[in-house]
Image 1 (spheres, one colour):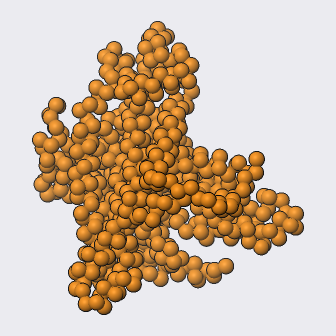
Image 2 (cartoon, rainbow over the protein chains, first blue to last red):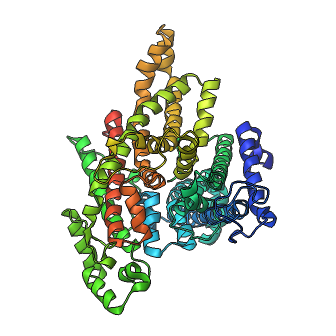
Image 3 (spheres, rainbow over the protein chains, first blue to last red):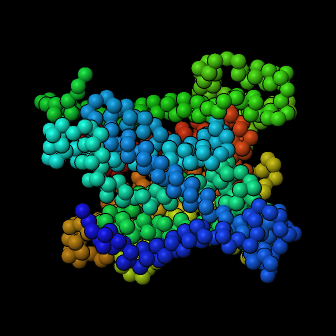
Length: 282
Length: 341
């Protein structure tokens, strides 16, 4: 077991520290921002396309809503939905990987062929197909992004489970007569957790990118929801009149994904693995 | 039946195939076709999971019972799903992509093929142009970064690519539009072309979409080329070549690059495969008249036949590229040809 100090070793590298600081700042902004919003995010507060002024610090959008208030509200869906989708992907992927890796019956090949088929789909196409079939909704979006992410998690968990399940302590647990669930949960899972969580940052970046992209395409969250990605697509038409209503959400999404990826890279390097040969799913 | 693990089975006489490469290709292609078959089922089922059928989705609030019945007959919705699936797939294989549902409500019928015929070329042009820049730039910058490892130039390239990798295409595209179209006024931010003309007649509109696509993929490939070059540069034969007195330039370009290229080729092909999602978003950002933009429009009006057929087309390209990536590696690394897998 690594100590906490060793686990936080990534924070000592320069880029990891910058990433962590920016990510923390954005989380604070998203968590507490809404309390400081001067207007309601959906209220029409003034004339459309106003440039920044004393009353509207970032101007107004194409419908005359306050851009600053929408910015302060609009990060919740970006971060919240991505965290939810990533957590769901890990829950499903870990369960499937554990079962497939531990079982020595037909269950393993059946589960893994299913996983392979999902991997053959371009992620964005998968989400578009789902949006056609299940409608444009938050629920479909989160489930879809989780579905795009869990196959590769399942593969990693399966491989790690196979290595660990022949170790002495697992065999001892089986000999003691522990139930399968407890062997999986108490013997195997804690020992593969490091491997499994090594690229959680990379997957979170991937989830943010996919969720924001689908929202930008207008196929996820629907107006009048305040969401950074949706703000960009709603206001693109008035870019020359009022650039701030597009530039600020774009820069915020950019800093969020860059910060998470910097942390992910620093964590990977401190664990001795490299992110170079992995890629964020798109 | 309990099966023994393959490594436990004794293999006294290993059959040697006369054409191991041909066998590998055949197996890989067969697996690809099987995958596509399953993907086609998923596409068909996935687009129709919502209760209430396509007709209700197309006509929406304006539907009358007669209109719905007529449209259902038109789209053959009264047939059971397996029959419709089979008709769609057999039509697709014969080049009939079906009837687009978009015009149905207003009575104008268009086939999916007619709606995409002008767009395929534009998308291919965008993809090829991106690839034409992607390959030399990623190899060049990756090698440069690897030879200057630890120096400021390497740090610069590594950090920049790490940052750019994580940007969604629509953010890169939007920021490029802001910079080059809105503030500097140098390039068009929207890809408007006269109907019937090819995008190639106006090369200026291609600049920003290509830059957007390059940003995400180039950053990735540079990092990968750098990693594989670094590994090669650490090997003994490179040390020997240096000790033999060859100039560094020759060592890098002639000995290291050739051996570092094998993993690089696979990485490049995979990145070209990953362009698929990027192209869909990028076309939408710039209003670029290609397949991806049409697909997004079709999804937003829930034009199910269009999404099914174009989705399958995209899946075919995606899976083929995956096969090409695998085959290229086998051709480049001879010892993989006879490896039992």
